[in-house]
Image 1 (cartoon, rainbow over the protein chains, first blue to last red):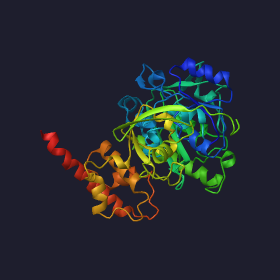
Image 2 (image 1 turned 45 degrees about the horizontal axis):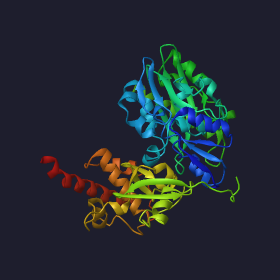
Image 3 (image 1 turned 90 degrees about the horizontal axis):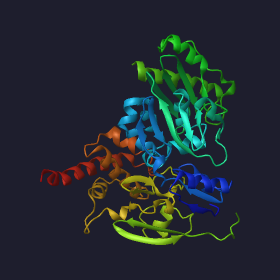
Image 4 (image 1 turned 180 degrees about the vertical axis):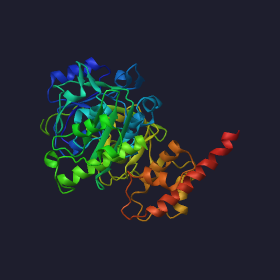
Length: 266
Length: 172
């Protein structure tokens, strides 16, 4: 690691002040991606601003619309939360599938979303559930938030404070892990509201998480596994690498969609 | 920032295996470095140094973490338990004893992390663990001797022993 200063403010405003005064400073959430990145010297921030001692960034609460999860809430807390399980059980399931136990005890939802790794799990849930990413400046709808590989709508120094998930009728998530890295090679989150069905795919897209609108349209009129039997995902915008071709990932995405649906419809 | 730039050292105070420790450290210091190099607690191992292998698992405020991917500064104010903190009064912890009884180690490098994860597993799921639960929850610990069969046996036995060690107290 290159040298950095370490700061641990106890209020959002103080953290925001440090980050806006120094564009080379970086917020530190759970550190499960940032610390490995620093170890490889792939980043050289002047300072790390540890957000872990800001009380209002943590915690889970039920809202009239659904559930609100503080940005610094650990994956393990989301996985174990009765409030999340009561509102959106698929979201608890997803949180419990991230990394391994020890990683889930440190990693946070805000950190995952700010980083926006194309193989991360949370982006699929946020996009399919049409959640809002709330920051110290504004609320950003899921469709505006994700901008590409590791690219989000966040501005310099903007801090995610919480994520608001609206309740849905039904939701499910399934992913196929890379056998070595355990990251998703294709992960599919499907969410059904009274108005529509949204299907989001992570791990497979060249530009990160995306909505599989064709699948959503078909499932909106017929919410069954059989309805998508003739469906195929266009591989032209999918990732191709040594772990699998774009065509392979397209097929995986379809299988994961079926599994996600099966987890809901039985 | 160049390497020559003066680093502002940060004070940390934490409880390690029940003892209060404090130091002024370079902010880059990883928790595992602090444990091994500053406190000489070399039971916690560094295997992959990329948070995959689990040799460095310790308990931070009661939950398993990979200490190669936590800054010591982040652990300020926290309570840490390492493999050295499990045995009491010269007697092995039931999980350690179970690993010895069941030959749950070959080269032994992954063992401290395996045992710390196993104790965490019992804390979450109780002492009656089936094989599937054990295997699934040890997915963040890698044994490159591939001695998983006896590790799983050890964890099940250790968990049961932890349960019966606690039972008399629970009945009181």
